[in-house]
Length: 257
Image (tube, rainbow, N blue to C red; front, side):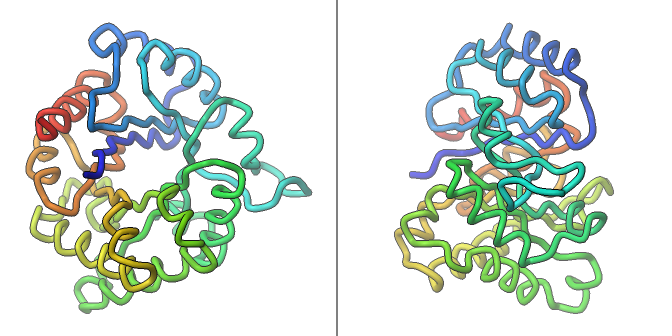
């Protein structure tokens, strides 16, 4: 059985002091990550250290970065390496988020390079895939997502797939107030898993966590997590408040009982 992964992507929010406050408040109600659930927060780079230190009050809590470069060093102003992320104590890194693709020219090629580098350096990449509204309306969403998955996993060995996570982002449902129905989410998650089976094998495909990344919140978390192939959420705004984030962790925990 796959664990649920409840992951918060804070995007460009929360400084170091605010990060510490978040974890101090959360740890008042959460002392240990529940069995069957993995929990992750990805803050901004300057808050990584504070997140690692203050989240240590919660046994089993994980911290990740929101991006990284695929080179180990060089003239890449404003970038950060996998080793620098590991140095903070973080364990995960988000790769190819839709905003990185849209605003910062992230490509399938760079996603693949970053995925391979993250695995090589002992980070768990959360690899984001997903379609825009126009692509869904034109019935191209399966083709788009298949291409992104295939390209992301080029030259990734079967034994390394378990060291990765996939996040499906229906881009049209991020920050818009729109949410894919649970049926739409399950359909795409099942499709992604079937594509992973084609790339590797059934056991490998069944082991990988596939997260829903389209505005999961306490109100819809239960319905989405009940879907067979939805293994958690990559959560934006609803992860910024301890109470709402805790509710989703508790929902996941209840479903594992």
